Image (cartoon, rainbow, N blue to C red; front, side):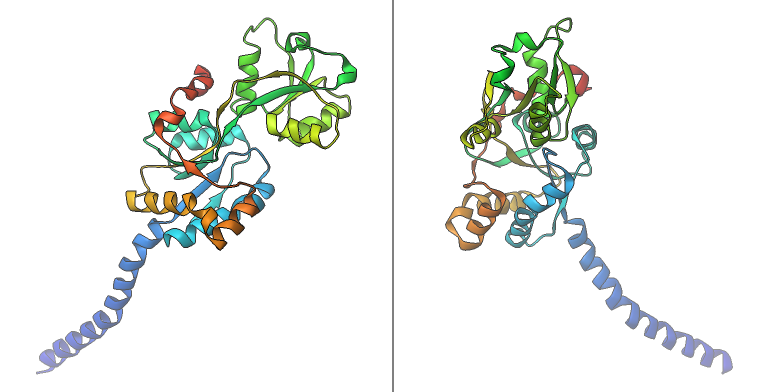
Length: 282
C-alpha cells in the first residue's frame, strides 16, 4: 500500500511538472523560429560605424515593420573586415553595397538582387587647380588619398594605374571627407572620391580639378542571401519599390538621402565583379 501511495504521489508530481513545463516548452519552440528569422543587415563601410548607424537605422526600422521580422543593422570596421566577413557567408544576410560585390555574391554565394538606388555611379580622381596637374599619369610617385582595396574607390584606383612599375603612393583614409581634407591641407596631391562628392564640393564653391573619372557602374543594390525566404524577399522588394508612395516611406527616404528605389536584376550587375582582383577573390 505504501509503495502504491508513493507511486501515486510520484505520478501526480510528474503530471504537475509536465503541466508546468509543457507550456513553457511550447513557448520556446514557438519563439525559436522567430529568433532564427532575425535578419542581419549590413551597409558597405563607406563611412564609419557611428555614421552608418545614424544614416541607415531608419531603413532597418522601416523594413522591420514591412516584414514583421527584426532587421538588425550591423556594421563592419572597414572594407577588409567587411570583405572577409562577407565571404564567410554567415554574418550578413541582407546587404546594401556596390556593383562589384553584388555581382560577386550573385555568382558565388547565391544572393538575389532585390532593388537598387536609381542611376549610375562613378569615381573621380581630383586635385587642386593650383597644383597644376592635368592628367592622372602626372601623379605617378605622388601621394593620393583614397580608400584602399577592396573598397570601390580602391578597386577603381588599381584600374587607373594598372602598371605596377608606375604607381602613385596611396595614403589610406576612412572616407571621402578625410581624403578631401588631406588634399586641402597639402598632405596629398590628389584624392579619389565618388563623382557626386566631387560635384557637391564644386557646387559649394570649392575649387577642384577632375583629372580622370572611372567608367559608370549601376548604383548600389540591396541583395538578399539564400537564408532569407522568398516571401520575405518579396516583402522587402515591394516595401522599397513603393516607399515613395507612403508617408512612412517618404520619411525614411528623406532620412537616408535617397529619392527611391527601382528594380534590380542579376543582368544589371553582370560582369562588375571583374573589378575585384584575383587576390581579393581568393
